[in-house]
Length: 219
Image 1 (tube, helix red, strand yellow):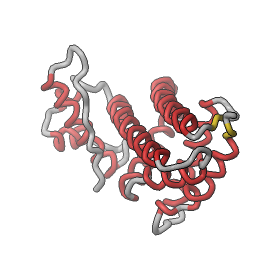
Image 2: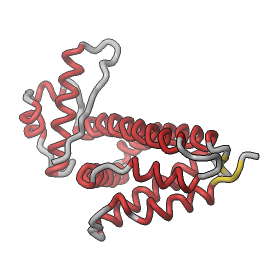
Image 3: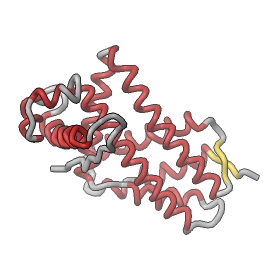
Image 4: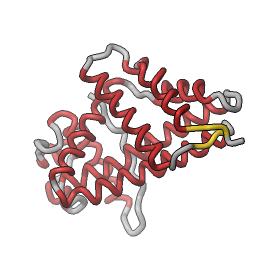
C-alpha cells in the first residue's frame, strides 16, 4: 500500500500539537482513500487509523472534501519540488538547446513508482469528477489546480531560460497541455496494464515532441 509521506508545516496561530493532529489525519486519510475511494471512505475509519476521535477530525476539517484538498496541496507541492529537482539535474548536464535530451531525462527522473503514481492518479480523477458534479467544489478545486500550474509554469520558464529557449504560447496554455499529456499517459498505462510505465513512449517520445512544438530558440 502506497502512503503519502505527508508533512504539514505549522501555520501561524496553530499550535504544534494541532498541526501534528492534522498531519496524522491527512496521512491516515490518504491510506483509507486509496483503499475505499474518497466517496465511500468512512470518517470513523480515518479517525481510527489516525488514533483520534470524530471530534478531532471535525475540529480540523469540515468534510472529507476539505480534507482531500489539504492532501492535494501537499501532494502537488511535493511533486512540483521533485520535478524541479529532476529538471535541475537534467538541465545541468545538457548543452544549450538540447531540449529533447533534457526532457527525456527529466521525465524519467520524475516518474515515481507505479503503485504511488497510480494510486494518486485514481484519487485525483475521482475527486475531479466529484467536483464537476458539485458546484460548491469547483472553485476550491480550480484554485488548487491553478496554484499547481503556476508552480509548473515557473519550473518550465527556468528550464527554458537555461536552455536558451522560449515558449511560443503563453505559459498557462503550455502547462495545461503538458499536464493533460501526463495524465493521459498514466490513464493509458493503467488501462493497458503496461508492465513498465516509466518507459512509456509518452514520456520518451511524445512529451519531447510536444515541448519542441511549444518552444523555439530565444535568439
